[in-house]
Length: 71
Image (tube, rainbow, N blue to C red; front, top):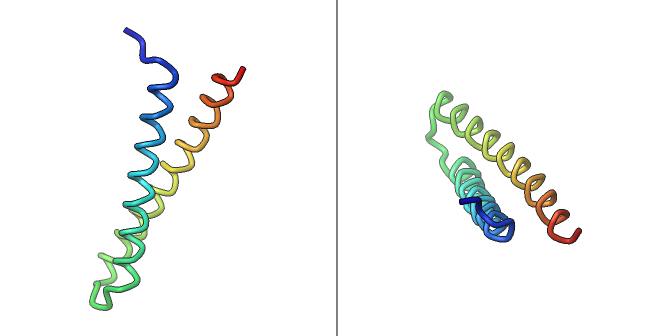
């Protein structure tokens, strides 16, 4: 059975919210942890970049779904 557009929109918003929280946590951890090795620092920056990309994808999906619901 197909998922309704409103449920899909709520799910996308929840996932986006979780990704934003994780992004903030990683950013704060990166800034406040002085004893990270170079590899750990690079890995954390990579994770932050991936999360930023996911958030942008969900932004687009949410805008698209909201546009469909209003139409």
